[in-house]
Image 1 (cartoon, one colour):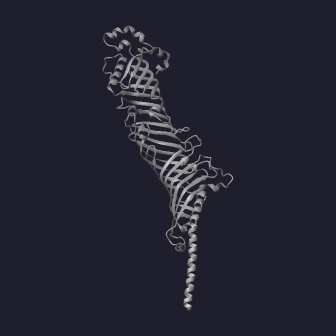
Image 2 (cartoon, helix red, strand yellow; image 1 turned 90 degrees about the vertical axis):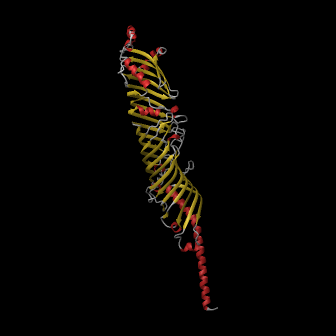
Length: 541
């Protein structure tokens, strides 16, 4: 065998052995990837969220490239795809509560070379079917026996930087302190988080479809840094835009709501400020549309599900008023109880009647209103559950329907002793009283009505369901009985004037009012005379 041939055989053999060795090394490198990725992922989750992490299944898909080439390139430019199922992060030592995080699926791609660098940079990770469960404050395990700084979000996150996170189909659940209460839940359609580095807040952009009232919400802001010891204290801030929310999803009301505002706080407690407009707001029982505008500031407490309203500035039509109170959830109620205080110092009666009564308003004027509103968890129509209690005072009142105003003008003429004086026309009325609305009926503890020359003091009930009046009280006229009449009756009644002149009034009569709001009937109270004597307080003004 020639010397040259021997040399070629030797070089070939060495080359084959070298290639075989490289292939073995490359194969070993590729086999390292999956367990290495699993371990790095678990380490990141454990360190980042200070929790017990589990991954049910992990799949690593290597690029279609020869093992030898992969080794020679040291993984540079070779993208590996990673998918995982059944991820859960549990509070340390707490198997009695739901996981802090649970994910149906996650996926990301990364340069193989980058897997073995520090820090490891993942351009994007996608999370699907994510459920975040925030426990009440103080229910995380204590870290008093360890280094406090080792469990805060200020620590490096296992040398991993995730530049972008996309979350699909997520739900945030905040557990209340009281175990008997139902958790507060938020369904989130999509969230995009952009990282600016470790130990700083992430920018986010979120889109969700609100369940009730249905409508689209877009929000942008900052989230984090994550507070591992108290997840509920993780900062959250941003702005939102809630469009085309359909209020008809609620019993008793309708209209399209648009709202914009900002918020700040933490996952367990958010303070929000904003404005809301409902240009076609209406009660379903009347159907009349009245524009509604509010400027609000609220505090939503995720630990108990309550929403507290600071004084809300609102406008209904052209009427301004303020509201304060809260939306409270009690025990195992699936819905909340609304408790509000309303103050309307100078409202337009026309706006309120247009909202509450079918057809055109029957009266105009200015109204002072102070009332409490209590709406328990609704299983029926709003009106069947609504409880109102307060006082009102109407001034410069005028009835817009001629039949009612004619009766009021006639009452004023007779009260002034000028029954034929047609110049007494279109008189204005005043009205005030105390009331309580419950079980679809308004009970008036006192109701006073006055026009020039006459005053009526009443007590009674207005049945909203059947539109029926049932009132009794007193009618006081400035004129004497004979002066309310014309012709021979004026002279014939003079002898009885002293009988009806009482308590400083020219005429004092006990009366009843029944019928409907649009067609009331007035008459002498004969059958209730004794009852009125027993309850004089209800006849007072």
